[in-house]
Length: 71
Picture (tube, rainbow, N blue to C red):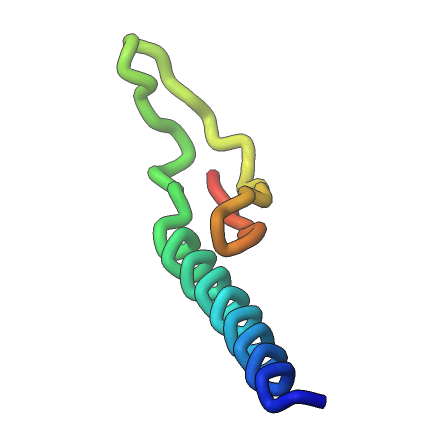
């Protein structure tokens, strides 16, 4: 095994770990605002929108899939 192969494997492992870490940080930042504005909120056109509950959605990002929950 050449010395370069061990370095390449280490680089790939570090890169994969940092990408997972970045996805976790991004997911936390997106989850900081749950989107809840009360049981009813004006829609901007004179109507009222009722809270139907919170739902999870998985979004594909450059760091990988992250799951967010929104009202």
